Every structure is written in structure tokens, then in C-alpha cells.
Image 1 (tube, rainbow over the protein chains, first blue to last red):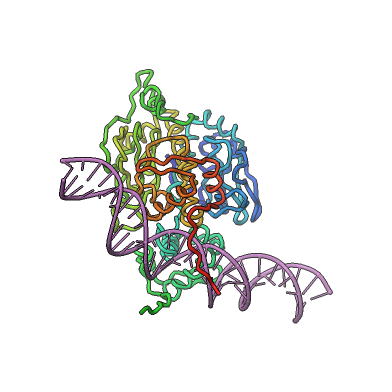
Image 2: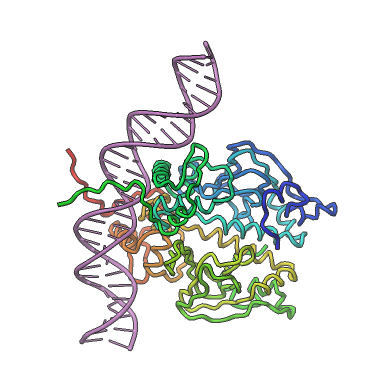
Length: 235
Length: 235
DNA sequence: CGTGTAATTGAGGATGATCAACCAAGGTGG
DNA sequence: CCACCTTGGTTGATCATCCTCAATTACACG
């Protein structure tokens, strides 16, 4: 079983798990061929038939799930990073579950569904590579659900804690709000509340964590002092 | 790649994908050994180290995710059915992501993590079986998030539509409420609202669908007439 | 036939969504 | 270089939804 695929391992085909499983080192051919896509490029749309499987080499991809059909752009569901696949659901169903858009410049290696199936049959460790990637992303990618998972402030704190060390560029407010299951306005207020507590210092493009321990405590039990609502007096 | 594993395929080892991949038919040995568990049995608790991987042969298992640590019982996350695995996250991390409890009488086949790893190395199609199962459950298991995915009534309607044909015994109200990201009280009111519309006829242990087309329409766009709130007059 | 648990109902309040206005930061073209 | 526009983000006010807590009813089970 492969270890976690981090960005650095993936950029070179000789160190990429897919390349290794394809036997690149001993002159094997990798069915996944690289391609570049610009920021904002739409990779697939929910409901479309799956024709290609993509492997993310570099960059980030936003996966959105469209709950209602009329809206083209669903709510953000997850951010996929290098080392994970897109479109593997094609192995068990015919159409895409969700839409995907490049968040920045991305490099993807693509293969047709048939090529992937052939690869799975031919290469002994191929399935292990896919299994590894799927397990990793299903472990990472546990989206927050509404209030059941705590208040807006708490979900934000939990996200900040989890993101924590990996300093990958912050997603835009709109995207982050979607990932956290809230509206941009609510996210703005939640950021404000944490900032009022001195726990974080939100900049326009990055959020600096000032008090990690308090942040963790808020993420755990949801208590925070900052900017309580005005309480209406009652007779 | 395996096809969808339905209950009937799984009960006999000769038709079970795990058994087949272990070469049961040609006298191979399957590392997964069956065990029965009674209703309510706790299979594992979030945070515990993963020591065994379980394969569900029959019955249903409730997977709960504990968001806060003090609460032993987290919010219901998904219901796993025959053909899916528990504890596969052990392949990529050391401890359980979530807790699991048998919803009724269940039969599980278990193997230690080491046995699973050895099995993956020894058996050519083992990884494909696991990959298939993981993809299936990640396709099925897309929990609803709070209001972002629509109102309580809409989420309930969507769940009823999706469950639809497969008449597996209804989960208890508390469990169902958790799966839908709402409180039991809210679920009760949502059921009442749909019943007032004549769309469903909720019994204590089962929910009869009276008007499937209207139910689908509510699931799609959230409009429903039943029991509108009293609207306060404003000057 | 009591008793405990699950499900329901009701009232009130907290929270987040909505809508509209506003602000700040980049472009773009004169 | 500056008016202009566009886009994304913030703020404020109001409202709908859902949560909370408590009381009550229905049901299963001894």
C-alpha cells in the first residue's frame, strides 16, 4: 500500500504512485497523460457521462455538488489536491456525481475510462494505488453539515484547526463559506467574531491564527466570547 | 471491476466478492471470518485504534461521527449495508474516524489489519474488491448538510425519494433525524408537513409514499403547501 | 396494567439566510 | 494618472427556520 501522496512525490512521474504502478522506471507506459488547465477551467459537470479519469499532479480543484438541478454551480463540497483522482465514480456509475473546476493553474493527468479499466487489469498494483487515493480523500474530505456540526463560528474554527499547518492558499470567501455550509455573509460575521476574540487576524487573502489553543477549544466545544448578540429585555 | 454487491450475492462465500477474490472456489482461504452481533452492539468507537476490518454480510450498521469529544454518541452519518466495509481507514491512518453500532442483528466478517494487508499483497483482485466497495459507499453515502442543502422538509423528501424502492426497514426517528442533519422534533414536524399535503402517510415504523411525483418535485425545488406558518401582519 | 422509552406537540429564542447598501481592490481605457 | 466599471467582500436590518426545553401522548414490554 502506498503512503500518503504529497505534492512533491507526485510531480515527477518516477515518483508518482501512478507512474510507479505503471512501471515507468522499467520503460512501462503510463496511460495517464498530462495536460494543463487554466484557472477557472471546468473539468466536468455533474450529470455528464464520465469519459475520463483525472489525476491531479499540481494545483487545486474545487468539487461542487449540485443539489438542485437548475443551478449550474452547486455548493462547494471539497477541494481536491495533488495525488487525488477525479471521476473515479465512473468505475461504478455512468455519470459524474459532481462538478469540478480548477481553482488555479492545474496540471492533470487524464486517461479514458477504458484505459483505466485496462490498466487495472494489466497492472498488479494499479488497484492499490486507486484504493489508496480514494481512502485518503474520503478520510480528508468530510464536509461539514449545517448546525448539527455546531454553530458557524465553531465550524470555522474547526476548519482553521484542521487546515492549520498546511498553508495552502486560502480559498476565496465564497468558496470557503460553501465548504463550511454557510453563506458568505455568515462566514464574514464568524470571522469577525473570532477576530474580536483575538483568536485570529483575518487578512483579505489569508487568515493568521493568533491563539491556536483557544481556537482548538472553540472548535471542540463551540464556546467563544466575542461579540454576543444584543439581548432583548423582556418583562 | 466488480459489479454492485447486493445482499443476495454476499450471503454465500462462493458469491461474495471477498470470497471470490480469496479464491474460495479453488480451495483458497478467506482471511475474513464471520461473526454475529446482536442489535445495538458497538463495533468500534471513533478515536480507537483500528485493529480489525469488517465486511458486512447481512444487516445494517449505523456509522456515527463524533464531532465533539465529550459526547460518546456522535451524530448519525451513514447507514452501511451488506457489501461494504468498516475500518478500511486503517489502511491510511491509525485510528477510527467514526463509531459504528449494529442497527439490528448483523453478520460481519472480520480480519485483522495485518491479514488485510497480506491479503492485498497476495491476492491479485483483492485491491479491486476493496476499491469497488469504497467507491460504492462513497457514491451512496453523501450525507445532507444543514440548510445549505435545502429546508428540513426538502431534505426529508430527498431522502424518501432516494430510499424509495429499497424498502429496508426504516431507521428510528432519532437516527433518521441525525442522518438528515436535523433534530427529532424538526423531523417530526417535517413529516407532519408532508403528511398534511397528502404526499406521505407516516406510520410509527414505516413511511408510506402516497404521491411519488409530488414528493420528487418537493425534493427538487423545496416547494410544498402543507401547513404554512401563520404570517404576522405588518403595517 | 403499570412503567419506561420513543415520538410528538407547543412556545420562545437563537441562529443564520436574505436583501440591500456599501466599501475596497483591481483592472481598463481614455 | 485618473474616472470608470467590475468583482468580491463587508455591514446592517429583518425574517424564516430550526433548536431548545418542557409537557404530553403513544407505544412496547414486562
